[in-house]
Every structure is written in C-alpha cells, then in structure tokens.
Length: 171
Figure 1 (cartoon, rainbow, N blue to C red):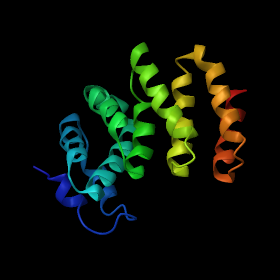
Figure 2: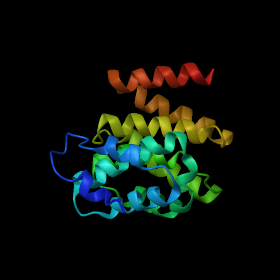
Figure 3: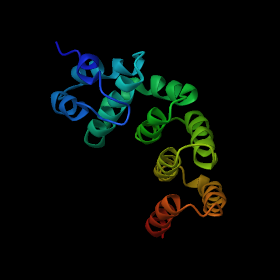
Figure 4: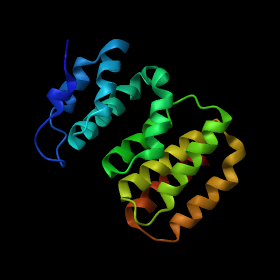
C-alpha cells in the first residue's frame, strides 16, 4: 500500500516535490481516497502537494471527488494557507453542489476573489471557479458580473488577463 504523505514530504514550500509521481500512481477510487487523506496531514508541504495532485487527477476524473464533497466544502470554510486555497477553488467547482452548497461556496469564492489581501493565484482561481459554477447556476449572472467589475477596477494585470478570458468565453 502506497503512503502518499511519505512521498510528498520534504523540500520546500515552493516545490511540488514528487506530486507528479503520486498523480501517476493514482488510478482508481481506492488509491485516490488514500491520497485524499493527505489533506489532513500536519505538514503544510504535504497538504499543498496532495491538493495539487488531487487537482490534476480530477481534471479527468472529477467523480473521484464525489464522496469527499463535505470535506472539500469544510476545507474551503476553514482554509488559511494560500497554496491550499488556490487548489480548493478549482476542486470545489468540480463538485455537484446543492442549492444551499452553491450559496455557501459562492460566498467563500467571492470573498477570496475580491479580497485584496489574498494571493493573486487564489483570486484568479476563485474567479475561474465562480465562472464554472455559473454554468449550472445561470441565475447568478448579475452577481458574477458585479464581482468582475469590482475586481477589474483594481487593474491588476494577472487578474485582468483572466477576466478577459472569462468575458471572451461568456459571450
């Protein structure tokens, strides 16, 4: 049995370490579930790398997240570290959310996207996630447009680049 936390240890917070090696080893729900437990690790580097691997895996296999929905939402509500938030923003947008869950997540992502103290990666990924959630929640288009206008006024090049993409796709 693979201990993913051991593989993800070490190095420095700016490095993904062996996260791609872990991605290659996860090929079913059972191995994904073992990887998911690394999000509870006390080592911030392990959590960040596990979140990165989970994000990469679920691009093609979003169903792996299904049984972890409550945990992902809880992590969104309590996350403090930017490197976890930027992955959570994208992960939560891959979930099948109820109306109440959409409201909770929408508020969290809006706060992350509009908070000038948040990292630019967290903000950009939050905007992307809001856009993704909007696909199945068309009634939130006005709210989404207000968020975009608020963020656009800050005139931050990296964020504005994402805003241009989102506006282009939305047309």
